[in-house]
Amino acid sequence: MKTLLSIHSLTKAFGGLVAVHGVSFNVKAGTIMGLIGPNGAGKTTVFNLITGNYKPDSGEIIFDNKNIKALPPNRIVSLGIARTFQSIRLFPGMTVLENALAGRHCRMKAGLWSSLFRLPGQRNEEKRAIKRALEELAFVGISHQHANLAKNLSYGNQRLLEIARALCSDPRLLILDEPAGGMNDQETEQLIDLIRAIRNRGISVLLIEHDMGLVMEVCEQLIVLEYGELIAQGSPAEIKSNPQVIEAYLGVEDDD
Amino acid sequence: MIALDQLKSTRNRKAYFALIGGIIALLAVCPLFLNNYWLLALNNIGLYSILALSLNIVLGQTGLFNMGHTAFYAVGAYTAAILNTNLDIPVLWLLPVSGLLAAVAALLVAWPVIRLRGDYLLIVTIALVEILCITLDNDIFGLTGGTNGIYGIDRPILFGIKIYKEWQFFYLIWGFLGITVILFSLLEKSRFGRALNYIKQDETAAEGSGISTASYKMMAFTFAAFWAGMAGTLFAAKMTTVSTGSFTFAESAMLFAIVILGGAGSIRGVLLATFVLIGLQTAFSDLKSFRLLVFGAAMVMMMLLRPQGILPPKPHRYKVDRYMSDLPEPAFSPKEQTTREVKGI
Image (tube, rainbow over all chains, first blue to last red; front, side):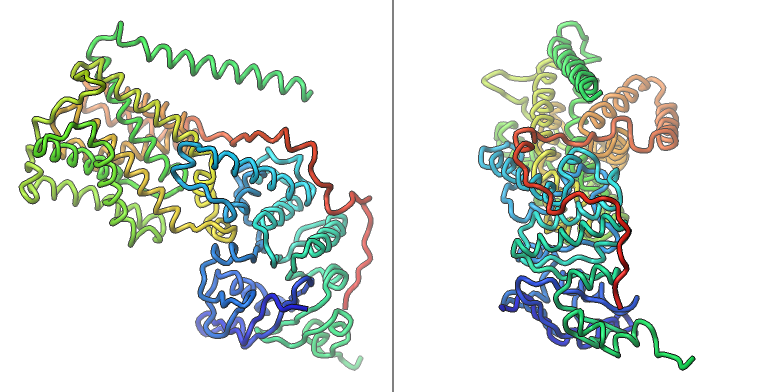
């Protein structure tokens, strides 16, 4: 299978704290990959490096044969990497539809003047974007909420809206930062179906998650980080039986 | 219940359109029965409305703190004054020229500072007004006429009619305001307008959703300056004289207050606040020293009782009905509430 995202010895330090140290891995096209590790292992930092929110101190990030390490976040989105945030970041005072339309922005062209004078091209583009945004909202199951303000959605639906917004940008890689955070069991079950459906559309998924049930069920490949370093990589079954991983999560077994 | 809500909202909408129509009709005929004093006040309100609406794009919609907006108004007014008095170019032809010059000024100022946090931008824009006024007062290049300013600007000519009476200016200014309101309303509900709103609501999320926040901030700032520059031309044409007294920091702060009190990002709110605040200013002009007292008290009351402004922006409505019928099914089936087996390491 083709490699979509390739990360080579990525390093990032904040002052004296090395958050990510020499991490390398590949994400193959069409897979669901999980990034796990104890709190503070550097998982979100890796995500922020990929999406351009942080600049790496060293290392390369190659997406689809293009080095994206020096690009700003919005350029990376338009190249095809969309993300959701660990702490939900929607546009709270805007409608659900407008939140989804934000993801569509990078695929639209209307500028200041065509918006100001509502030229025909702008109108058509706007209609297509609204249709697409509604389709993505329906895909995650919240299209009936389109006119509500984002801040009035339930927590689980806010997470779904973030995913819909990301999908609107036609991503080839979707990065989910703790998508099940704050979801109940039923919502988590639905999320598993949703993540599979996203992959079935040909979009690769890279996710951070603490819900091991979800991770083991949905991910095909796992990467384990501890103290900013990659300690294991493999299928869920391999990871489950990896002594180093068990140690990282549970500590060393005592005799009694 | 839903039907009732719909009925109510249709009735509300009808009442709303009737109100708007009534106001427009009233404005259209008011020169027939208002004397020059009131027309002057209305013209003042009209000019301020154009300015406040342009500031609203930066401050209200994008959330950028700009307390130096009159600087661009001044650039527009002085450009029109200088080019008209020196080169005899008809003053209304200078609308786009003054706008462009104001936009260039904005571009130069904003370039280094637009990425800064809000409070830094605020300080820079305040300094901008002060520096500009001092520069103009010093008769730079012998063009700006020093503290006396520039006088003898031609009356504007529109469709062969020389505009010089107060009621003629009323139609010119309020016509321009009408166009401004229509265009800005269209802008608000477009890709461009939404991008500005995303930035205001959450800049990191906007950037992470694919919006180039820095360039949109620049565009908003520059475009607002362009519009303020055009308003400056109208001002110069109406007064036939310009001097720095009209573009002080106090005027800038007033505009800032109008946008915040009206409801940042709300066109109706900004229009209403201009009407009330500039109206108050005119009504209390006999009691000049008390004016600021009333103004200050109004500010304090507003901040305590209604910090979101008089008429905060309403959520935008989009036409979606035609798409709702054939949307895809959700990616997951609705499930019964079950307890999930805890799997894992």
